[in-house]
Image 1 (cartoon, rainbow over the protein chains, first blue to last red):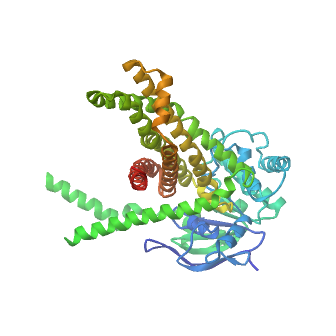
Image 2 (cartoon, rainbow over the protein chains, first blue to last red; image 1 turned 45 degrees about the vertical axis):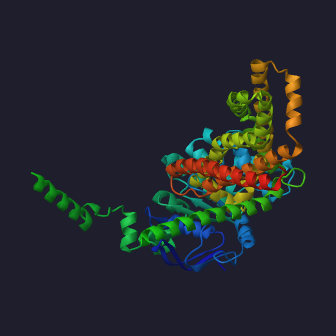
Image 3 (tube, rainbow over the protein chains, first blue to last red; image 1 turned 90 degrees about the vertical axis):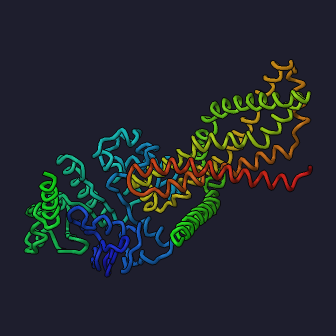
Length: 267
Length: 267
């Protein structure tokens, strides 16, 4: 039985369809990468999977609970089994790094402060920030912030780890370090990992399976090798980095023709 | 004509919706406040509330004191210029004492706190929304109202009445200084007149108003913050809106409560 099951998911904003009848199963213990260009709906799908938004129709089962229609307390229970590291890291700026990581432990467990301190250090050490706990988030570099966010996401030992654009805005070396960290965490903690990204090297390094989104629909779902070998034109365009010919689109051509006409009229 | 009616109707619904949202948020905060109380609640939440109290109360004390001293002087001078014509200069003491305890102390404090802390609440929560910190609280199974708003509200409920008392004392002392320099009224005698002029009802009335004003400032500031969507420009707009709306609602509430106390009091 899949740990996450998305069925006929439709999401609309102000009547505009963003996700169009998506179906996806994510198996326990696998790393699923949601790949796609900007604005294709991958972050929207992620927000649906972690229960931050409710869809227009369809269902999302996480560990057997339909989070699209469950009660608040059931959703809270599901949230405790999910750790999320947001694209912006979303660390609390008024709290030190160690307080950020300690927050879910203090709120959801009855552990003694000394034990919490120890757990926090272990989590920070696991992401390579063992010596940086006392710093404030604004004193960290971009890569360190992302790692701190991962440490906070794994603080309660979740079954599912969700990472939104973990390598966005990072240099290739730091991005590669994060990829290795994700692989290491998955190997040691045995979590199901969902990663949203548009970085191809990162996706192919960490994924067990890849779901490729295009304009709100899956254009392809499969293993790394299946995606690499895919003949789907949308997948090929993305993998081979073929640009959309926006400069020759009818709207742009019409706009420039209108501009030239009006310029001639003035002369 | 239809357009005018339509726009009046639309605005009315908008304002009712706003007041409704404020009430819903207020009830949710009251329910969540138990967790912010000392001994029975979460000690980390209580610590946050204490920090907020220092920010709302102690940090604002110099500003509120100075504003009240200036207002006390102005009030005493304006009162003296008129009362002197009737040979009733002594009643400047009553004017300042009653005016400050019932009205000016709580109102001046509310205006200062609204500009200082109401805007800060809106900006803080708005920024938290933009940087996905509110989302990260939700996925950590923490209720933003309980975690962010309740400590602020508790702090405002304690700090605003305390600041009002400080404002009353400063305003009345300013009156004492004026009376000493204008008619050589000794401070001890001034204080005796003050205690003769005000009774417990005046003090309680002022404190009740302070609690209401604190509620309005915290709730409006936080609601404006939670309503932020989009980017940093939206945070700026919500901050301005928080100050404008809370000041307006404070004055409306002041008028209502003054009317209630006037019609229910002895004449």
